[in-house]
Image (cartoon, rainbow, N blue to C red; front, side, top):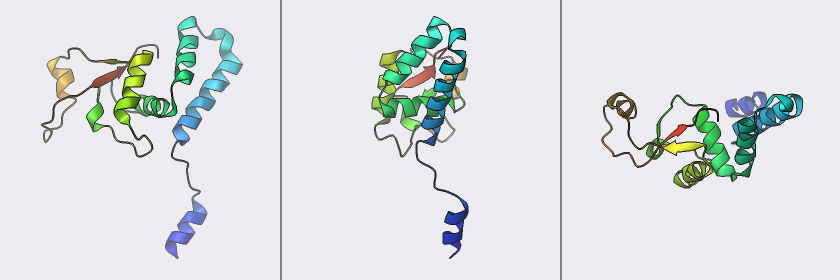
Length: 129
């Protein structure tokens, strides 16, 4: 009974609502302010739209998190089946990079005190993306 009332008050949210909102934002900016976008910004929008949906979802999830560095092995989103493949698609598209070397401070921020696993891939959002 309580669960039924809760469902009535709160509509169910689509699992990829954040991607829909991001795409709507991009579309609105292009339509209303497209003449103000520089070539790099236009290229990013083109690149982003060419990504498959899991990669788009992962990108939007990453820009919503504190970063700039992320351990792919610690990313888990139920709506993204293959996180590592999505991350690799972002790397291939040039919108994230794999860390080659990190400072002690940067590396330390990736691990919790209880964490002992190795970094398999670390990504960051590129400036201007």
